[in-house]
Length: 164
Image 1 (cartoon, rainbow, N blue to C red):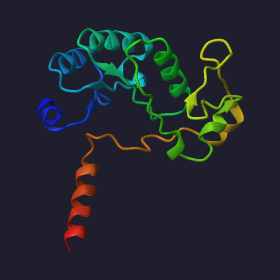
Image 2 (cartoon, one colour; image 1 turned 60 degrees about the vertical axis):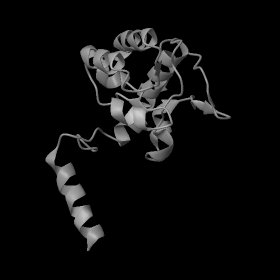
Image 3 (cartoon, rainbow, N blue to C red; image 1 turned 180 degrees about the horizontal axis):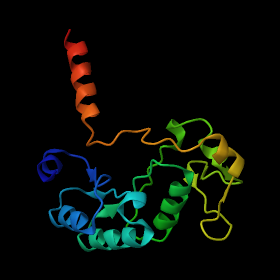
Image 4 (tube, rainbow, N blue to C red; image 1 turned 90 degrees about the vertical axis):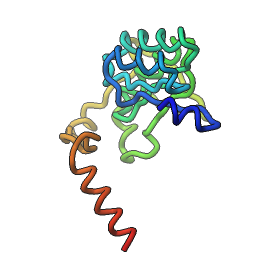
């Protein structure tokens, strides 16, 4: 990562697949990226995210939380961003996901005129729509882990098709 960062003329973000504070300590100590992109749902939540952001800040790095699992996680990430001095841009997969993704929540559309809006209610400021949640039940592993062998098989199959 450090060699990649040194070779490119633009900022590098990394960390969405790291889970432990020690991994983020190593990433930031090595200055292997410009922007630490932890996933708050995977690294231990908001409190751990604050510790990671503090590590990054001590080393002159920005943070930009990775967020791909839904509107509740996005709302938590936005609260984190609003309360973290070295937070930069917020990643959001919502515009590229299923069309009903925003229906999970009552009365909150996070993006207005290109900016995120602060929810007004208590807690995260959102309310889940139980009927929409029931209509779209959890599916185990809809997106495969990077560590699964099927990635290699799929990439190998694609490579053979492109070279044929």
